[in-house]
Image 1 (spheres, rainbow, N blue to C red):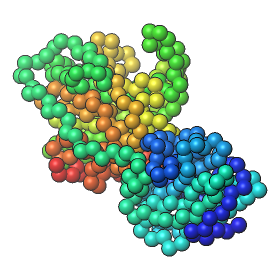
Image 2 (image 1 turned 90 degrees about the vertical axis):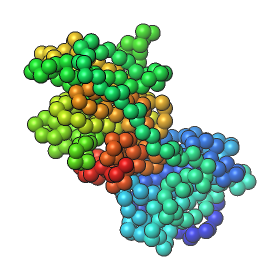
Image 3 (image 1 turned 90 degrees about the horizontal axis):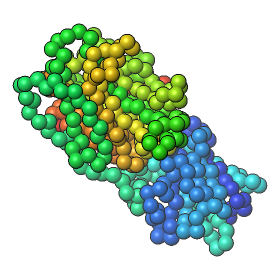
Amino acid sequence: MDVSKGSKTDLTASRYVVDLDGAAGLVDLAAVLLGADGKVRGDDDMVFFNNPRQPGVALTSAGAVEIDLGAVPSGVERVVVTGSTEAQGTRFGEVGDVVVGVRGTGQSLTFAPAGLTSETVLQMVALYRRGSGWRLDAIGQGYAQGLAAFATEHGIDVDDEPEVAPAVPAPVQEQVVFEKVSVSLTKDSPDRTARIDLRKSRGEEGWVLTVGLEWDGRGAVYDRDGTVTRYGTGDLDVYFFCRNEETDEFVVISGEPGHQGDLATWPHIRHSGDSRGPGSGGKPAVEQVEVRPTENGDLLVNVYQSVDNGGGAIDTFGRPRIAIRYGRAGRDGRPGPDADEILVHVGNGKNSFWATVAHIDVQDGVLTVDGETRYSRMFSELMPGLDTAGRWVQKPKGGPRGRSKSRSGTGLTAYSGRCAPG
């Protein structure tokens, strides 16, 4: 049965699936649970791929929204199903005909919103309470201002914090520091920075510097002492944003073929390859790069935790930590047991598309790591980057955007460019 814009239709089933015909891969669905005041009860009331399930409402792996009307909490009066084209960098006018399907046992409804042009967000339909039953509202209302404007209107706290510059590294001492470094930084550490003097090698061959993210996986099990007894599952995509201080160029190194870098050319970094998730050989997952610290520059460690990776903040991936090690190579070619080590335990339970988990700066032979975890703006696919002054930028102009690897084969829209002015 076709329904028209603005129509109200009684719903006769208890469960429904809302999906799209004719726009496969071009529109991302989400749902918002609203109270009688038209606002969410909390930020968790937005169901999308980073928060795919709430009581009565779930986003399926196929991109449809499943709604169990009997399980929707009593404080929820409306479930609004939306579509967005922001992640694809396009607008509804470029998508073509969109047909919304609302299907339950014994009842199948279709709705085709018309006249869409510059909108990037579309309120498609709402399922709302009417007396003891439910009805369907065929809305078809678009937003050209995007997801952030839609979210704010409905009471969702959109993170729009000012961009924060990392702490200014202390002046480098001329005297070489030879003491072994063994530092573990947590969110409770009074100072989230640590340093390694790379000059201690005195040019000796065989010294290795590695930077990487390690994690135990969602569902990992630990004993009383914190030792892992069972590794979990769940992949993460780690990207290393490198900035050239002299030319203002940037390049992103990743585990994807063709973007793994080369130790022989700038930025003198080589990625070890995408992790397939923890559990293999009873070890944590690791994505890391080997670095030749031959010049001044910056390295930003970014983690893309959405789309292909499913829901949840980075904290859910089993004690994620940045590991920076420097020392003489062992038999496996990695820094040996006597190497310097800085561990940064990252995250604070916050959902976003991107998490920046370390900013590493090399100045005149001294490596400084800023281990403050920072996040992209909510609903922004722009990867955080660095400006021409080496400062962390939450939403850099013209920076790379994240995208689904399953659709595009690569995780970013661009892997190189120029840093924007500060």
